[in-house]
Image (cartoon, rainbow, N blue to C red; front, side, top):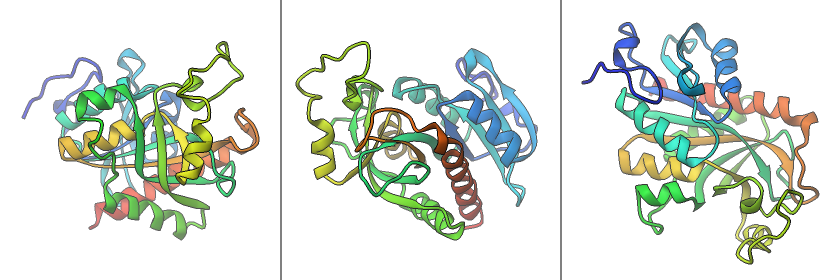
Length: 259
């Protein structure tokens, strides 16, 4: 057991004051990570803001300690944060993110629980071979869906496309680079036919890390774009969707903490 403070996240086991957490909520947005702690957890203390990687320690209603941390945007940053979180004792990680829907039934404001990922991410290839499965922990996935259903939250479970870029990798033409590579042209339609629900940028690497490192990984995202109609973010439904995703994740950890 090491008490050292890790280089990127800025803290170690010695900073927990005897309340060793084994669960974490991980968000790409540092403001969301801080907001989750302040609004949805209790007795919160900030662990670190080192390198802009905000982390707080708080408690669920049943007294279980939980870290709310940011992974930064994209899989390379996430891989660093997750590696160090595992070294400080975290054994369950739920990503709480946002995503773009590519199926008509997944509306802005709904949540998507990823049971597996179509993983097109370079960072994941440093963790395991391309053909290695990117699958969420089934118990975490079930807990997320049970939590959503219990709260009356519209939730969809299925396969997520995890890619490395927000614009080219998600076949967005409205960007500084409208000239997409051939491998990206038509990708969205192809994924729709494969029953992929959404685009996001971290889950595939998280899932492979969970299976290789031996921790339980899950992911719930708020749909903030409906790519069957437009490429833009639907801001009117973002706040509600993010609140739903957070409540789903917190309730899922509560369920898991008593099993």
